[in-house]
Image 1 (cartoon, one colour):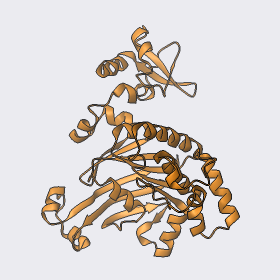
Image 2: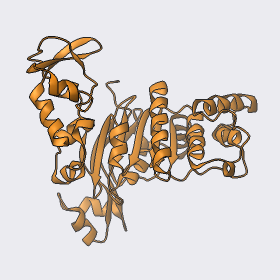
Image 3: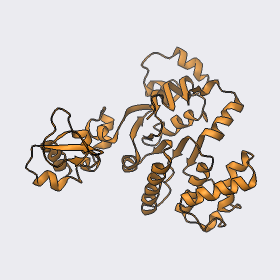
Image 4: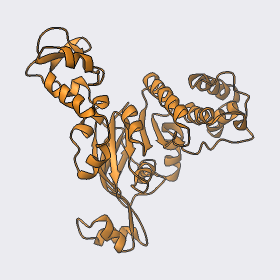
Length: 338
């Protein structure tokens, strides 16, 4: 991962109401969400500082009204922020002219929303090629690129279908292909799978993870589904009342919730499915014998943890031992799950 973040968001506020900038300037320090509301304003985003690194998938989650969609719209300046700074690829996006902002969105950003937003009277091919047409790309070149991404998302052979002839999952694939056609560096996805039934949703998550392994995009993915967040995320930012309660890896969030709100979010989660050997390993003691892979979950190690007699089991990443796992720590998590 690059040292410089692709998105850097510092002390960002988005307040809705009359003269929000003036209100923010005179607002007392530490004013709560409810106090702001009592003053006749809504803090859609409340003093958020967060970074997204190159190639990372940051999942932003929270209940309806928590501010997750508002925050991501601030990242792309679909909302102008009330205070703070947001830099995208080193540019302060609030300082960009309208023309520069349009160029940034066209050339660097892809967006996928819950509603597929397909053009009903255009075929799959024409829907996918549409952003390239808007960019002024020559017909042959945009057709070739559209065919390439249609194949990538598994819709080869359906290029001439219309949206009404596709299932919900297939329509969502067209939406994903369309956003990929412009080869964005940054990809924003706002609850893209929430309208799908559970089986198709899981298939789309699998497909999405396959695409990410191939393409290594910088992704901000919004969901209200914690299981989806745990499957997809490198890190998860949990929001409440416009503020980020905790931003960390899935392992750390379930092992060490930072607030009572996050603890309640995670209490029903089977930690054994989430926590990996690499997180439990300590470098000061490495143990002996055959190592386990750092990427193995506690659940995947269940039989080993129960039947092994070693107190400390070596943990390896890419074939190199990085530390030792205290077997009792793993068993404790496994027993919690039971």
